[in-house]
Image (cartoon, rainbow, N blue to C red; front, side, top):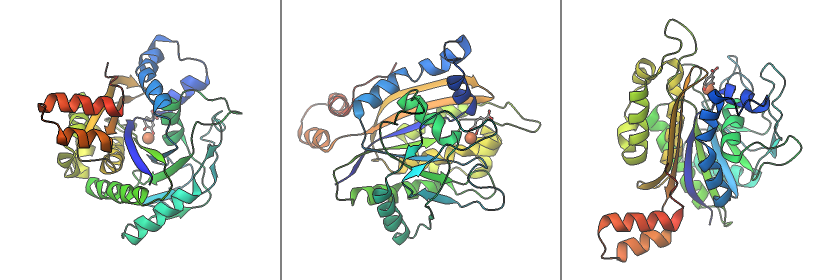
Length: 314
Ligand code: DHB
Ligand code: FE
């Protein structure tokens, strides 16, 4: 059986990709951003997923105002990096996992979530930047460490899906993964955000209080987040802050209770608050031993966390 072992939330600011591609990672401004992902890269190397599902939004690269699916699942064998105006980023073509992706499409659509199936799709910074942050810099002629299934969500044209719909889609994805017969270790990314507004009179808006509260609730109390209406994201987190609903797909695909392995938050990168979190599902063995054990709750929780992943909270 395939299983989702962890969820990763990460901003996908395009300037982070440009800093990496243009050799600026040691400049103090960018070092502050990249250093926050060093432990995550180590965690990912150790976790060694077989497949990553990456929930992201397309920024008028594969789709345009002419056609925007609400949820689009990448079922292709590969996804080339898109030309976003400066030529495609110098990263490897992303290999997909058509068998698992088609299985997810079947399971989720029969569960009444109407996904668009994409058998050919280019992917932009929404996907490639979080991949670099978690998998590190990968030479254009080398390979990403695992296949990736892209899930594109419309957050660029009104109306985007609600947070609740996103969370429930995450639940359906988890059910789909768990009904796949092959033994695969899967991680799921939610990308975008955190608070930011790119244009208009409020350009540059950042709301750290909102962002931190979002991360706290994502970790401990996601049910609070699923009730937040679009207008609150727009008012509090800026027009592009609505990208944060994608993190709820990731959260919905995890257990109700998760272990927060790592968190990082910094302001700014470009015009954006950068947020990052790793949430691990407790392994079945850890859950079982916690249930059996008579030890106090705090100790059980720590033991479970250790059984699943190193605690790397800084
Ligand atoms: C910017 C663009 C994004 O898509 C995003 O999520 C954050 C920032 C930008 O242009 O700075
Ligand atoms: Fe974006």
